[in-house]
Length: 394
Image (cartoon, rainbow, N blue to C red):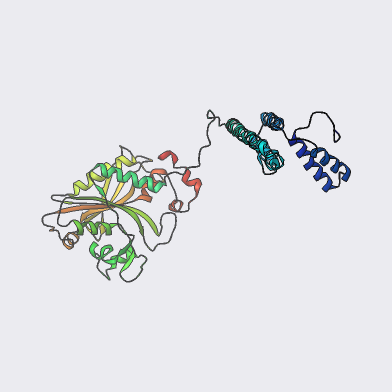
């Protein structure tokens, strides 16, 4: 270090200021003695402020700016030179020690330096930000040639598959789909279906009551009764009524307290039993194979007269007899019949002028036959292994 009074070239004022600050820090930390600190202060006092100091600060700052490789380095440099404790601010404060006539020119030079450094720092910031973005894009680049991870998607429930298939078949025949409430009135569930209060037939459909007038519906016939009431006396009516139904039953391999029904209703002039058979034969062939045939067996339902049970020829043995059909060659699939005159009359139709047929298909029974399922409870246990086996049927 030059001693006070040396004739060599003066150090840049900012370098002197920075060294003083360092020396003060050393003194505070106990790493410098008082003599060295005073020696530097006398040295600084003997130096003159000049335009050359401004130029030297600019050159040094631009040199360090060029060497910045990151935004963090750039921010550190900005604080060092443009901060409140930087050399430029110190130059501004030291102007009071200059002669009055030299202050304007010196102040202009210092302001020009400050603006030039600020502009250079912003230009450098733009370059470094672009560089950082390009590096991130390169590091986070996604190889789109690799196969993506397939999400774990579910598949349609087998009962929904069967219901949609039945709906599509009948929509193709000109039917519309009607829905209704699961919590139903006794009036539509029983009385309008020709099952008055205290009738023994109610024992066959014992259900869950909410109160004396409301219950969980035992069949979607209740929807048919609502349709008849709504459309009376208009004809023709062609609807199917899908939905869950409930009965007080013990659950086992073939019975459940909850199951899905798809009932159908046709009302119009000159509707005959042969129309019912032709319709159900078409449906059976579409669902179980073109070689299937059906047969009617006499039965009894309160809301149809005559009533029939409908069997389809076994799809496993072709009617020859096997364990699936219990050796008979036939499998029961649904119940049907001609709409009872009392039902038509209560809905406002004249049974002498119009007639109709109705049928009810159990979606679980159809699914069990179609997919070879041996236990109705599989449909409701939510076993993902069971449900996944139906992906191929979509």
